[in-house]
Image 1: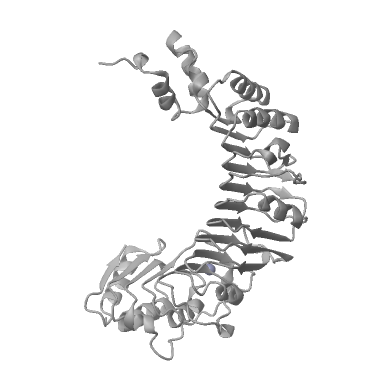
Image 2: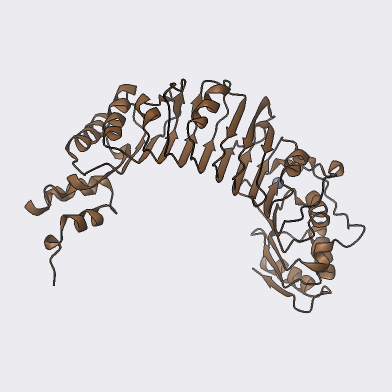
Length: 418
Ligand SMILES: [Zn+2]
């Protein structure tokens, strides 16, 4: 049987790539054969939770100093101890000089001052992935160019002004994926994302409980190549979507923004997931004539359901579900009564194939909706009901029998319960 010590350095490095950096370094103690293999591993993934600040700092320094891989593929730091901006600057400078392609500077400490982004990053033209958490970007130097940057994550990153955001993103000409978490600050009012190459965008600003909108704060998305858009936002007063592509898949969970305007920008979407402040009376836009898949928040969905059924002639899959934010506060604006559409929507007669209801509680309105869908869904193949966990078994059985006895217009329709 082959001995692992007989494997080539290349193979050993491949094996070591899959284990944490501190274990990689520990392999140097195994035997003489292993003494220097770790130095060829082109990554450092370091979490300082089990170190003191001094020990952690020494570990990073020593690794970067002794590592002699041809280039450094990845430097990932998850830090909760306090280091000086000079420490970051030094580590990042070494990584940049070693042509690092993936750089994570994640500080898990909100009570410390945000870390200024080391200046060498701004002109590191071969960087492909950059993830920042609790960082500060005050100035974007004129020479800034992130020519290869494709994946950018900005979590709790403080920018000094609207212009700084604009300028920084302009310096990323091939950016494809962007995540922005907790962007809101007193210094930035309009977070504008104008990135022609962008394909995936996630924006998230969550808060526990209800808060009024931050007046005059919001974001603009101008991304003509966007394929996936996810926005979960509890603060912004406005959200403007410009140049959104026809094939976009969008998931929107917003408390304060103008729902009509937003949906007006998404009428060509193929897939939508919505938890929005209902404003259906005023909705006068054209049909969502490409929409095939729709997911609605089970809490605020009743107001949206009529609108979406009557304006989505090609809808095939409908899902009513509990979104990640269980405390949907749009319920403040919701009417609780289901109103039967005045005429049967086209999608019920010609396209709707599946309905899934997650967190079904058996309220009268829910019951009426299911009854209506079963009665009018000519092509319905599946109706899946997942009961709310708060419902007792006996009650569940009673509801199940009631649902099973409802008349169905589609002979193929199968009901399932979980
Ligand atoms: Zn909702």
